[in-house]
Image (cartoon, rainbow, N blue to C red; front, top):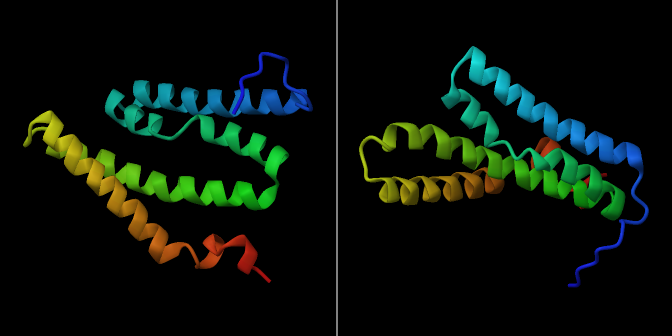
Length: 133
């Protein structure tokens, strides 16, 4: 791996704007949710990786549709685990010391992500790209 400080080549300007807009849109929705609902609900929304839509547009340009679908599916399963993490951390944080609660919910995230992947990865829209007819 090497670091280059030169301007990126072959980057189309509209895709840069799209990446910026997608990341900004997620942040705006979280901000509005904070005002309308509460900060806790907005925090859960911020768990959505705001960089993911931007990363997927970049990945599709560089690596193609198969790589993009694979990463999107992985992000989906990880996000389900993250949702379980958030939903369980809220009540658990008042019952356990902070470090213990984080260890427990970290394991919950891992287990939920792995189980949902194992159950769903070859079904419906999650069927692997190479297996599609």
